Image (cartoon, rainbow, N blue to C red):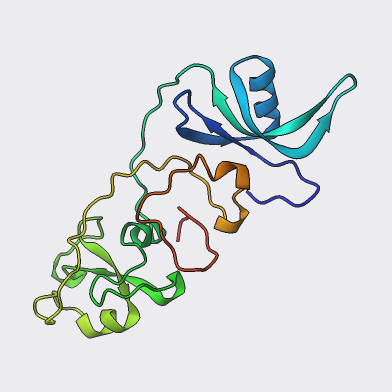
Length: 192
């Protein structure tokens, strides 16, 4: 979801409770607004013109009625593992940029360990080499936190550079407390 200066920006859609539920096209945003199904909370400076009127592109809309929707599981991806673990190696405790991280199977796959939320942790390359194909106890290493499946709400499924997120959205996106990345620019919730 990238856009240049000439492209129309998408809109963030909030439920009636101000909870983010999705990203919609600017066309859909204008239609929802005109039909009275959503109110514009914030608008871009970009203007759309029709024959008889002009309207600022909606940046954030709130539905006028609450909509029930099914919450989905947090997708098991390398990026979401890093987010869960706050970009911190779970052995040495240091915070790294994503390019300097990997993930480690607490119980090695060679010993029947599965690639699941409860057996995979964020790990720096140095600690990963040190641990090798052993358990943390055998390697004389201690886990900072026991791995578990995250239960934060993956409010919006999109892949976007964090610096591309429109400013009007920031007040409505509730980042999981684990999302405290280093001072870098990288995508969120993307497949690796």
